[in-house]
Image (cartoon, rainbow, N blue to C red; front, side, top):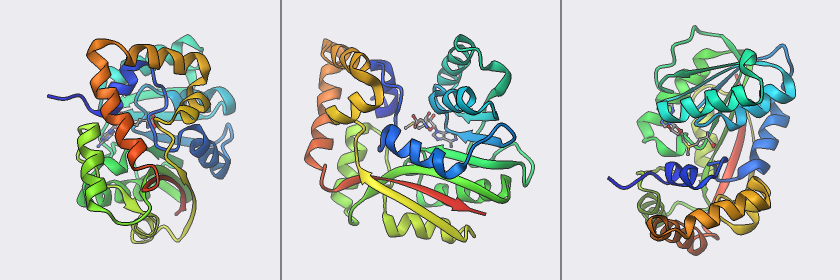
Length: 248
Ligand SMILES: C[S@@+](CC[C@H](N)C(=O)[O-])C[C@H]1O[C@@H](n2cnc3c(N)ncnc32)[C@H](O)[C@@H]1O
């Protein structure tokens, strides 16, 4: 079976597997007003990049979950390497059935995962995020945004990354949050930078980008890399990112 785009990019050495990269994540972090006394849940943490950054910067307690056991093992190792194990707990859990009590967390952060879910799946995740957030808590999400509803682009994106994705327009993402009782929703939208050269340099540094390109040029990786790269280039006017802060 063809490898999912995010797994493929992680294999090449990419650490941020999200449409608006560090720019969008930094906006989310600003909205969250993180501090050492906040209880945080990261859903879909993958290799733990954001969780580890938050633990290092704010010293808050973070529970981070994903379904991918291999990525969770990488996250454990990465947290140990920088000495933040006391702040982070990595667990295997499904966003649609979170193993936590109601009203547990001040902040839930979830990047580049809702896009991968069906309409029903997105609704189930949003119910769970609302349930586990404390009253007054904030949900921070970051997803692929369609500038206009466009089934052809949705299909092209799904084929290029080997995942049947469901990106929404800005209005539909906001509606998703509002229909799940989040009464204040703030958004930040911008260009898709996941595979643009400037986006990769901003997110991964020059050394990281050179490493990704070196790996992309290897015989086994070249055709999948080019398939994804060309699709994002072709549709750069049609795709973007949306970061949202939604308050309970
Ligand atoms: C595109 S990656 C994004 C990873 C990371 N959040 C980032 O922005 O770099 C999507 C992640 O969502 C995880 N995922 C997909 N469905 C999930 C679910 N139902 N529950 C928890 N994690 C899920 C995948 O295993 C993968 O690690």
